[in-house]
Each structure stands twice: as structure tokens, then as C-alpha cells.
Image 1: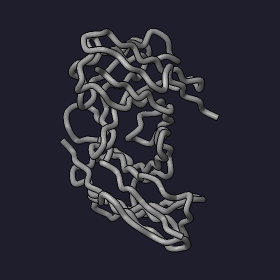
Image 2: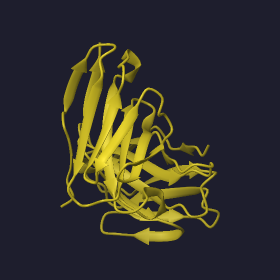
Image 3: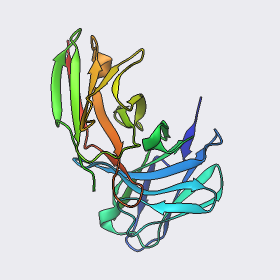
Image 4: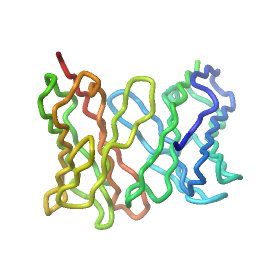
Amino acid sequence: DVKVTQSSRYLVKRTGEKVFLECVQDMDHENMFWYRQDPGLGLRLIYFSYDVKMKEKGDIPEGYSVSREKKERFSLILESASTNQTSMYLCASSLSLAGRGGEQFFGPGTRLTVL
Amino acid sequence: LAKTTQPISMDSYEGQEVNITCSHNNIATNDYITWYQQFPSQGPRFIIQGYKTKVTNEVASLFIPADRKSSTLSLPRVSLSDTAVYYCLVGDMGSSYKLIFGSGTRLLVRP
């Protein structure tokens, strides 16, 4: 079974703090993704990575950065958290690019609250 | 930027067939259409994927017309445990590769 784990289920941070969200997958997948999920807006892609040290911007990269130093780990960084970044964050991985035949496997999500 | 449109919610009863349609007018030539299911407090889970015509697996069928501008997820004989949010996912025809999820359809199955 593919397993995608996220470092925290719930996180509370203050405005201006630097926040790290960690994601680890155990199936040697090339591709990893970070989404945020908000009511009425569905899932929106923040960044994805198709290889170690490679990254591509998604729909809403502003205010976020990512790091992929190892194949199994993909980190999402909020350099200076703001209240409008309060959301559910979902990590996913896939063997091939998701829109072109690949199935994505999702983690359980991290619910981040920025006060 | 491609945009997908799904109904916000649907109601059904146990044992009925449910069809959920997603519109995706600007789907890219090489992109597949994928449907996911999500329960509360969980990440989405893959249901089915297709490129054109019809695909069937043990849990659902996916119908895609020739122009590929829409797709329909069909769930045969739903049960209470099928109550969930269903998302369609397609690629984007823009210059950079992007994944566009629909805003989801909340399906409620009643006894």
C-alpha cells in the first residue's frame, strides 16, 4: 500500500511565523504535489515537483515555497504566515504526471490555522 | 486557464444509480480525466481514470464523449458509505502544466 504521511494533522501558528509542512511518501514516486483545500473552492495546486530539486509553480504559489532534497520528502514552506493561509493542506504523490495517466495518492492533510 | 464545473450537491437513495457530470471545455489533448472521492478528515482517494469513451472498474464507470469537453462518473447502486465529495481532475491547456480540480460534488445517500 502506498503511504503518504504528513508531519502534523493540526497546526496553529501566529501571523509572521515561518511554517514548515512536511510530506513523506514510501513508494519511490517521482512526482509530489502540494494543494490547499478551502470550502467552495475545491483543491488548488500550490507547487509540484517531478524530481529531486525540481519544482514547478501551480495555480497559487504566492506566499509559498517548496523544497525537495530527497525523493521521498517534499516540504511546503510559508515564509511569513498570514491569516489568509489558514486552510487544509494536502500532499500527494504519483508515479507519472497526474493529468496524463497517473493516479495521485494523498496524505491525510494538515489543518493549519494562522492567528 | 481551464475551468471545470460540477454540481455543488446531489441527493440519492440507497440502491440507485448516481451520475455526476463535470464540464471541462479546455481539456488538453494529452490529458486524462480522473475522479476522486473524499471523506471528511481524509485526503481524496482515486476512483477511476479515462481518456475517451468508456472506462469501467469494480466501483464505477466513466463516460467521456468524443469531444471530451465533459465527463460523467457513474456509481451503480450506491450505499450509505458512498456519501462523500467527488472531484474531477483534468489538465490545463495553458503554457505551463497545471492540474485543475473541480470544486467538488457533495453526494448524500439516504436510506
